Length: 220
Image (tube, rainbow, N blue to C red; front, side):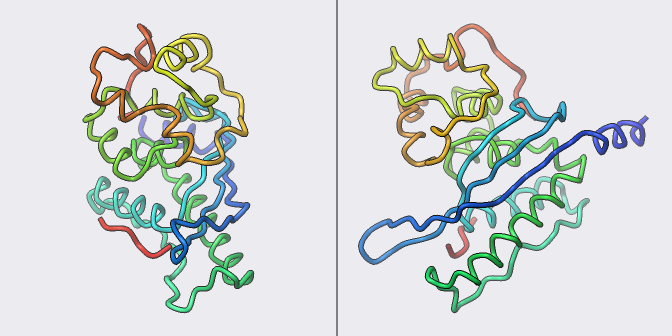
């Protein structure tokens, strides 16, 4: 039965692209590059069938560490592109090579049925959460589930908790790909998740509860 299940997962389409590298500035002296991760799938393993988020290299490092730990060494994970002490934000060839390596990493990860059940993978690919928020959500330490965090990716910006509740009740189950899903740091602030964590009475999904999908930073 397990073999039949694994074959069924392999027959489903999971396409992933790593593209559109962009330089982000923390301040005048510090900058990093993030990449857009586009996912298109018909797999039952994913709540959202089309998504787009942005992630930086250090977040890929975190993901690999979590997947390795959660799989209890039962899976030999693919390697990430090697860290280059001479990596330059102005070197187009280095950026392209790293981007291709990150895509190969995700493609291999998504071919493993065991890893597809890991909450950290789903949050990494289809939510706007930071590393600390992903870790807390996967551990069940937030007032929203993994599925809810995924569904909220791509919502328009909110100006109040009332706007948040109203929009979630009306359209949080949408699978459409949205351009609003392109800047995770801005969007996650707009979702007011910090307020949600400190206010137990605010339910991100109203009364509909979906089943929860059951470090160190590297260099940018």
